Image 1 (tube, helix red, strand yellow):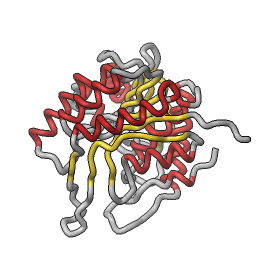
Image 2 (cartoon, rainbow, N blue to C red):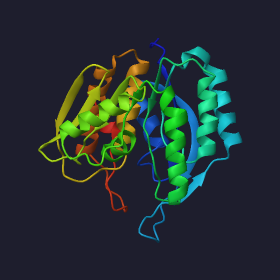
Image 3 (tube, rainbow, N blue to C red):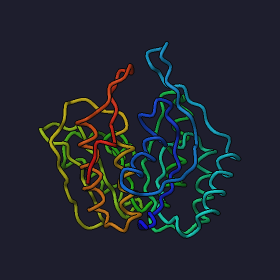
Image 4 (cartoon, rainbow, N blue to C red):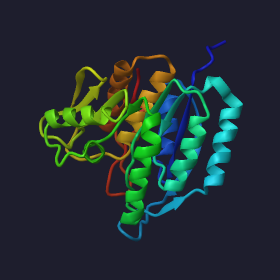
Length: 271
């Protein structure tokens, strides 16, 4: 008989085309040999008749809590690693924070999705503030992209790897043990550079850039792969390296549909 797989939990939104969010997270878990379960917080359905703009539909907090209750009751202590993705509203954040706080976690990986284009600016700001106050204190690992790192760190600009590292340190000062700040294609140079801050040391991870445009699902895939590897017992920096390899290969074999952006193909990765 094969070994029983490790398990990982995800709290995230659904992206209807499958290119990001909950669908991506479960594909990554499966690719890395981890059993995934989780909770849907919202649904994003692009509008093909309106330049593929976002349509944002939050899930009722009572339904969110019921989903989390069922999964955590089923698997109990077998679920000790969690990824948190898009939450979407202050009410959702409060519900998720309360339920997460009631469970014992070895790692909570937070992909800090700060805004959705389907939200009003005021609602987005309230959500950003609630995420900082209620979710970041629960995180052991946070994985911001350049925009998110700039907002969370309070920096005016991030245009170099050195500035990305400074942002990672400032986010770490908020009480997060590990910060994985993702440079991706946003910073100049031939390499896509991520910076890991562990509270005492900055570690750069580099992979050659594949094109100069962002690919949908890359950020979700990085955080989900880190989550899966942590569930299997890996150290954070080793988990980051697996995540970078998975996403690099997924971008290399990206999928092209009718949307104006390509998507990562997680199944391209082979350990």
